[in-house]
Length: 112
Image (cartoon, rainbow, N blue to C red; front, side):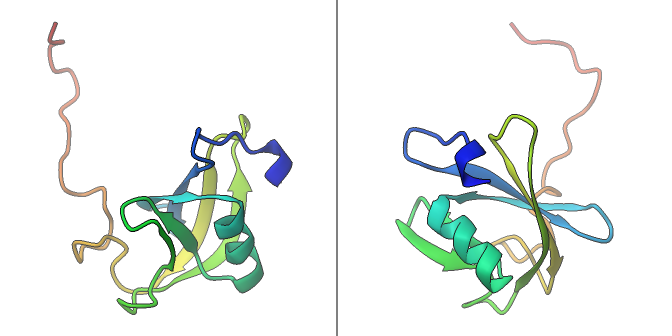
């Protein structure tokens, strides 16, 4: 799988976390080869924090753990899908998902 990954210039690949049984999209994190290997070997979602410059295992400090059910690579090799069993909130704000803050209206006129 690692040979198929298309990484950013800093060696990262976006990783979308999705609740395995409902399909709800929970969050977006970043993985490099080490984070992906740790995720696959431990069954716990491990990400690279771009702001802190270090690895973090989801839930180690918050208790909001992501137990990995399956990992998939998209057809282009530029995104990882991590299907998880989320315990508690997935978002750092304390919300269940990072994608419930703003709903963008469909059919809005284009701005130019």
